[in-house]
Image (cartoon, rainbow, N blue to C red; front, side):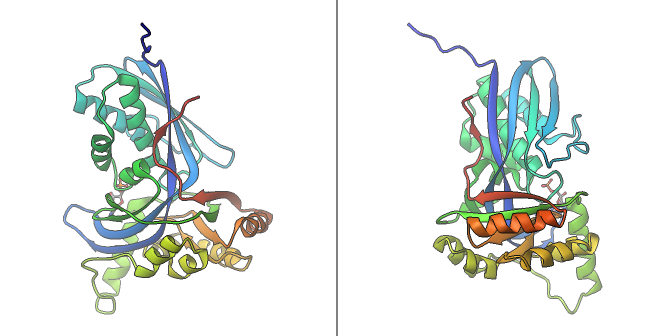
Length: 312
Ligand code: C5P
């Protein structure tokens, strides 16, 4: 008889995301905005390794263009919160030592912290043998942040509510992205506050948005796998407030669009700028042009899978 030994280390991986469309509605009583977004998971991954321990710890490392100095390693780290949530929910009494290796820009609007949380839930469930299952992990992930369910699910999806109510979207082919990573991150709540302040200043000119919806052109472009169509339909309501907080992003957008990008968009709450390229050659040319302008640039493709266990 053979028995399967319990794992001593579990390695999981979850992707970053680009919001190819993001419409923000009114501020709700719970402090969140109602929104309608189209997410695409892209090939920048957060790698989490989990080992048995008595307490809950995390150490964080980053790839070449990733500055991890601002990432907390105390209880406020989203990976620690995820591990604790799973332990509390399942009654697991031990702990975990986590290492997070980041490839998604920090505080960049690409859901890196959310990917850490999603990958950690899966890693701890596997390490601890809590057997919670994907559906329950997906449900738990919504309690950790609006973008965490999507980091878990991956692929292409429409998010409503806070962004955590997902429905899959049909998508064909691969899209080529070039990402300009800013030196200084932006706080998501600050960008939403700036949007609210702008709407308040211009009350009367701007109508309030009760139920935002994803533009039909976006769904059509994703279904067709057509980058030209998607470029025409991309939109982000958080772009204007992000530009207001970091005016230099306007030059970055202009530079990319002047060097072959079909379109550029601030990703989520920014400040990462995502450029959609017509194809791989176009993406490589754009990467060279932006790097020559001394920007920190990474390339990615999408859509890709969600959180999964990696067999080393
Ligand atoms: O859920 P998460 O922790 O990612 O959200 C961070 C912050 O972003 C929230 O505290 C809120 O200020 C803002 N937010 C929002 N509406 C959403 C999602 C996020 O106002 N739908």
